[in-house]
Length: 508
Image (cartoon, rainbow, N blue to C red; front, side, top):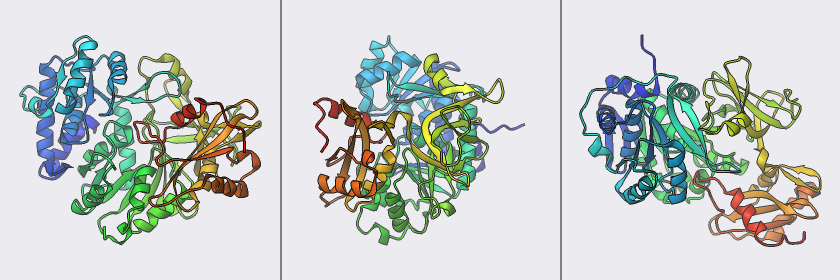
């Protein structure tokens, strides 16, 4: 009997085609056979350090070949990942180490001093600063983990308190990987370019999907140098490009990119944040030969829905339908299924739903609800959606982002879509800030496209032409760039905090 798991996918791919390129980073290319050998050696090295099945391994690595080795090798050793943003700082690192109590910290030379200081504060955790040196270890191959074993503790920021550790089993990750591969129709011939960190759910799913089908994963550190991303698309003959709206906004702003021939590029995916309609149109003009999949997901289950590309013209604001093998529906305030067009909270059930938050029963109880069966919980996403008459899902906003202005509900996305439709606006974010008279004042924050200038008064006038009075921003702020959190999303809490540091201005 052969059961496919994420821990066994690498060996399966290596047995099938050992010479096929598994990971490309910079000028280095590693085959599936070599990656499988290095992962086995890394697992043996961890076992030599005393790592046992079920232990956690804190990974502090940038997008490079060693990160792929450490991820696959940790699973081969029976350990679970606590994958961290490589830009994490001292206090945040201390929090995660205290929370997960890892058996080892794995990093690169650049982060070795930071890791050693944090490890000492945490009580003397072993630090591995050279992945490939450890991967040269010899030793017996331990049994593969079970589907029910913990695979990862993925940290995601919360609106209150410290980061939340989302616990995902091998079954969770294996199922969602298979579902994604199915609707993207991925094969071993694909070559996917990933500019998101592998420490994030969206980035990690690129590695898992490629290994599941034996495809090639090309890694870039980020989008700071977009010219390098374009070169990688051409040089590696990339067939798949996943991204978040910011990545696609940067790429579509590059002059001449639409004139470049990228004959191999067949699919694009967007997740992490809803893509504005203006950006959807720009992406389709820039990459006319590629199928664009708009998707919605969250760390608590990796992926929830996708919009089939043939539905883009009919519903460009939709997050689509549930991924294969899952269910998703909208509940109203009364806990009953919402009617067509009614806004409510999105609920999810399926084998990809997390086990809960690491050592945090209170937060777990807020998100995990009793399901159809006694043994099956369902996930309350905390996101507001509506469905159209054909059953397609449409993201409205986070429950935390809902603004109450003058006693009326204001959903930021509606205002943001208006602003994104203005020529010269690269990105927009709308937040509510405390106001003594209004309850919450609507503040809009925008950043211009390259070479453009924006006038706050004109933007507010355009909003007034298209929106109801209570939705018109009391103030519009123009920034060179909008602040971002570690995942590359606009940091709305930073925008709110900046506004509340000073007395709120009078509405104009």
